Length: 372
Image (cartoon, rainbow, N blue to C red; front, top):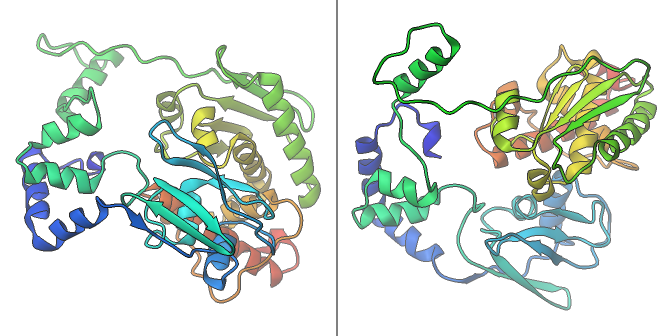
């Protein structure tokens, strides 16, 4: 995304896009993926695709079918059903990455089953979130400016001088005097307050917005059940938890400092969750809650170790039933790959490796507390 290149000005960005668009290999690239392509014969019982699904955390020996369970407002596949496996449903982009992003290039697809053959027919290449590099390149080739291109993908976006924005923030805090030319800045909505931690082991306090589709008592019950189940597997005593379910992505990001693709942040006995609409598009609210609760339970013991130990343990113990262990040598992710991932795909891939690393390490030691 453009927002990641903070030091690139509009002129440089526009020129970069034009150069990319006019180079002959990229022109061919743009043309290729604007056409409808059949991705054919992807059946997860073949070794390559079964291994990909296993790395994504899917368990089971028999896949009965592959079905489109839902679509987004833009018509892309939202969730894919995998009857016969566990979980029996997964986010479409996770499914795409499990099969291979060069095999199933987009979530804008339809599928048809014929015996043991499934044909995926789709358009485009990518996850469909944010700015399309291909479309931006073609617009640049037609002579559009960087501002016009960004305006197409991010309606209402205002390009601001970073120094001016920083100065306006300082004025609001009262650390410097306001300048007459400074533009007014709208007030920032308050972050949900943190109440005192509830007393007693295993109690969960949930904070949700008044208009939230999920009620506080339902979230407390969901988190409490996950806490008791996972604590029993770990052999630890559950501690009090406070969970905030944010109503907006902006609110979640302001409270946590995390990028948009992060589902939850765990700090001691406090958990911040992204909006439920976003979680539903990923692995669902229940899975996000369970993983966050698991991380809160293992962090007192594993918090001083590499991030892959803590995050891998949380994912591992969230699974229901027996866990299969990936074979072969796995490169455990560096801390930066998990805490500073540059995209949703990069983070999910790193988390999957973290879980596999933890599962392998657990086989070599006496109990989860000894994994390092």
